Image 1 (cartoon, rainbow, N blue to C red):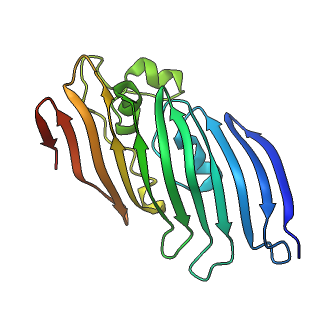
Image 2: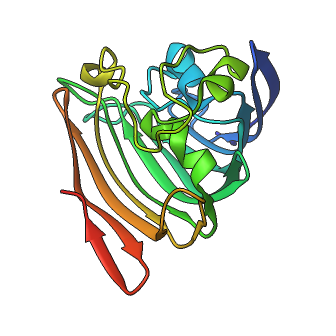
Length: 211
């Protein structure tokens, strides 16, 4: 059978998705090949819609190719390939894969930001200011003078999935409070246990490992 064209423009709350492409196995509703543009106020708001556990973030937008195999024996799998986007004022690029495996689904991928603003990184690690969180509808106990997070992570969603993601921030736009120049981390989430090994910051004249 011929591929079946698919187009949609969907808004759910503050999340906006635009898709255009084909159902490539229409007889079995088995596979998709789409261009997906996604935007919203915070990545964490995708959890109720997708079941994918993502951190709180500034407003984001992405544009990439989504390829899905819905009847894979190992579990339905989705690949968001070669996407480009922004989180706050920082650029983001990469490839992500998600497989609905047992006992838990898994997110994997490689992400790169060429120019990362610390103000955009802060909410991802729970260190953004009260004002910034209130703007997104959240609560924060983060003192305005503290850079590293004082709040505990919201861990209740961590057992919903596993993850294995590498992230590189090639250039951290200078924060007045921090001397970091770049960032690399390998995030692994396994059965609710989170590790960042390494969590490596570039500083003037060298590297700083936080693990």
